[in-house]
Length: 190
Image 1 (cartoon, one colour):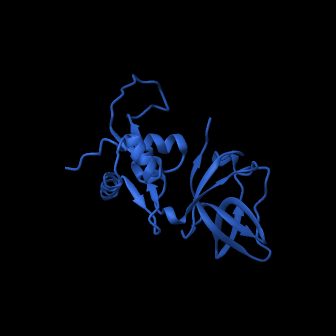
Image 2 (tube, one colour):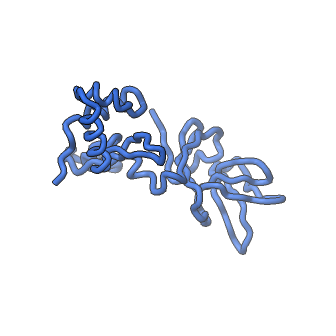
Image 3 (cartoon, helix red, strand yellow):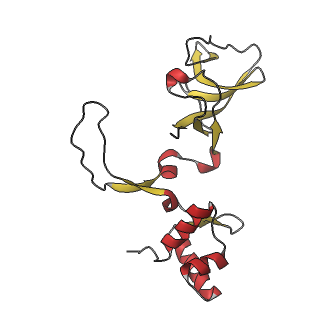
């Protein structure tokens, strides 16, 4: 069984504090290593354990465990019940929310047309390109050369967009409707 190298937590702390991966020299400093060879071996071990990744150019990238959070249990959203805290597992938000990282990006929401779907101005939406939209999906679409986020609707071969706010009418394309991405998650910070 592979153990997590003892210096991994220090590298994660550097990443969280600086919002970037450390260089090899910075890894040596935070890990208290004196030689480049030892640092190189540590980095290779982290890569082999999938704790750190490398891009096509060899640049270090954070692995999924960099943002892992403890999953402590469940909480009732109905009637109150006694709280029980139990460490069930750990998971990263990236692991939970993102299936295809190369096709996923974040957009900030402006406007109130999706408030009845629980999407407010100022929220962030996680969207995925290359997904086939279906009736009822919330999509990022270009309709008659203007971009918007709405419900995708399709009936009898005709597609249109629908707001989640009663004060807005459905939008039918005069020329074209092109879906660029499907909304996968809404992120709100309180």
